[in-house]
Image (cartoon, rainbow, N blue to C red):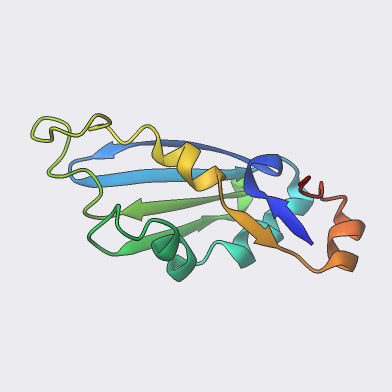
Length: 118
């Protein structure tokens, strides 16, 4: 089953020099394991392919039901140097929430995950 990340999580992002910092927080405690399993470093790096030039680091914060990602090479030098429209990396959270997750139908039903509408 297809599930939109925006329907099961919220996110915040900002800048740390040339690195965008993106936190993703599950809206319900039971949804955190799905997010943790689906949002791997590799998947996030593929999602931002062509937007970031560096590596992706992932930090788990299970007590907060959250993941934190550092997207290196995302801000063209950082807020004071970049000519990008979003030099502080605020839209990376919105971009992250556009991800579509593929979840086993039985698991999705058990967890009460909202199905993506066409």
